[in-house]
Image 1 (cartoon, rainbow, N blue to C red):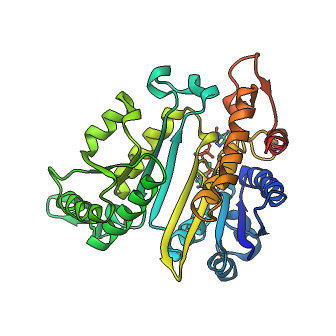
Image 2: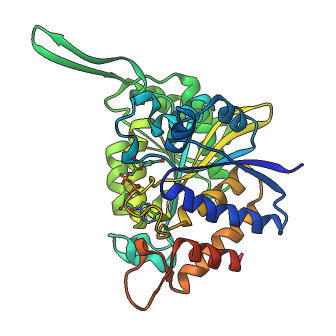
Image 3: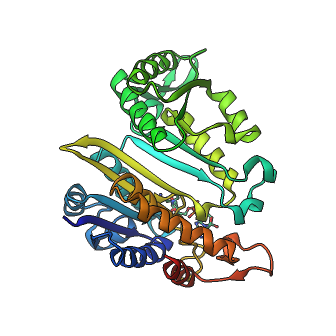
Length: 360
Ligand code: NAD
């Protein structure tokens, strides 16, 4: 049966990078992908037409798809719109409704871009790590929260909460991923000072019993931040909570040097043998270059490659896409964001799409 992909280009360069990625889907369909895609609106583009950033109809389509590819949402045009109708609310709504609790962000350094990293060549060359961040729990959602007036002045409260089932399910995603990679998971918390850290460590240890062939290491979050810049190649899969994951995934991302190269996936619970998955670049809608055919489409194309690997069970097609990207870069083609000197060939977003498609 054909796979159903819902494409939500969103706003700004989201539209341009999604267009190039759709062309890659079409090319892969000639090579055995067998996917049907449908485009719809999300974010500001949806607000302009429907008065809301995510309609019930689009949500229903998302639930009936095998995977969702999203471009980016947002832009200053919607700055004055009330918070619940802002473009970002569309994305948050999708994450919530599809229970996308696991955020996967690979930090992969392509040979040709090793100099784009601020770290020394030998620290980052051939780097390939995966950060798995818990996305729907922890301190960003815990209650009580708020700012109160007290007799001692104002008081702000955030609460970090984790249930054992939330830790178990994210740990399972991490162990499962590691089994398709290099069989090592580093679980990161602050068990030395936080109760949630103690429970996190306990539950991950218990879950590990089902994956005893994977090496499990526990690390404190502050040490992990340090190790990421000191010796990132010691890691394979890092699993951590929402707050630490937010910080550590940005830190790991910068090891690779460029925002236009970073894909991501958000996976949900398995229901009736199906796991929801939303695949999107890490970058935003880049209003400064939108509509100019300058955006780097590689992050979105690599997000499709993650979809092929983790949702559609087509690892061989995923490898084809990654190899094509690798090849284009080693041939010296660059969009503006990764262009560094005149030995390289500066290309537009659509030309980069052409070149990658030719090499798939
Ligand atoms: P941004 O990621 O859009 O842009 C930051 C800088 O990186 C800009 O200079 C931009 O030109 C450049 N850049 C980003 N992606 C690029 C690409 N693919 N190719 C070439 N250059 C690229 O972040 P921002 O400027 O802080 O935010 C702009 C808008 O995007 C805001 O409305 C923000 O809320 C939204 N946003 C959305 C998402 C999302 O949809 N997931 C994520 C981040 C920001």
